[in-house]
Image 1: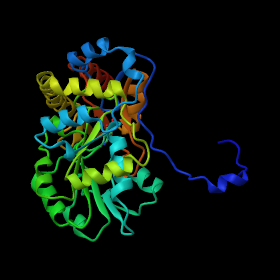
Image 2 (image 1 turned 60 degrees about the horizontal axis):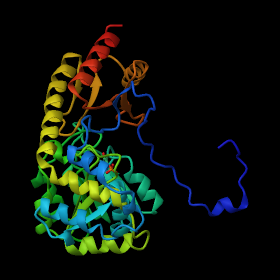
Image 3 (image 1 turned 45 degrees about the vertical axis):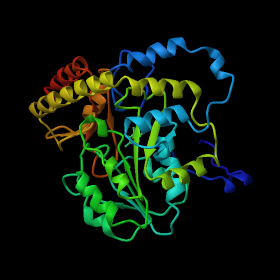
Length: 357
Ligand SMILES: *Cc1c(COP(=O)(O)O)cnc(C)c1O
């Protein structure tokens, strides 16, 4: 804002510093490796259904309970529909979960290096929080989460590091914190990690959140979901129905169901991304990068000689976008989304020429 004078009413404004999403360039020439989207198209069944739905489905309000999609997800994961909550991307699900479950005077715990939306929601909802530093290998330090708190959240694998914790590790944290809700954000779990979902049958304080945005190639559709004990889900619904009953639009519900149905395509796509990721690890090592092992669809890498910011800018000039965070402890890292093999080859070629300059 250039106008520094405060109007009277501005003192009552809820002022927030918003989350900054990765850049979405209009230019289609750009190789986009900056927001962890899937490089492959959504399932053919999704495209087919998209061509076929009549505009008249938009005349009526959608089902506020998102019944069809909730049931499809419940069936897919072997749950009851009462164990599933669907929202407008996992960002919506997570924001609703922060508002619902983090309502203590004690601080909510999450890592110092993690999804940068968490502290934004905490501040927005005036939730006290404390960031627990990752160790020097970017691993979560379990003991930090065994102290008294008002709730716990972290992604597994963590973002932007790609580091995975085991289900046993998560169980110890959930088990030691049964007086608060523990949220595990599994945005990237489909790319090779083991989900802690089975633990929801054992612990009623565990909420597992996943998304269609990355592994299902549907970031533009905005579908996220949470799975947990019936009571947790019912509290989430109470808050949702207190803000907006019709969060999920009709086309998203229909297309989401189609995506779930076409399971072989989903698995095939993931296999391709994982194969490219493993190949990319080798290539990046050859180019002088180092990184912790990634179980997600990105690699968080630092270069031995060249500053990350310089590489980020040089790549951008070549129309290759990766993500750079100008933030303490990680300002010398690039988060590189796994694209197609062709896109990654272009990246390696450009990196090679930049590094030789
Ligand atoms: C991408 C991402 C999300 C949000 O994804 P949606 O598109 O809103 O479903 C949530 N958590 C993490 C860790 C993410 O990387």
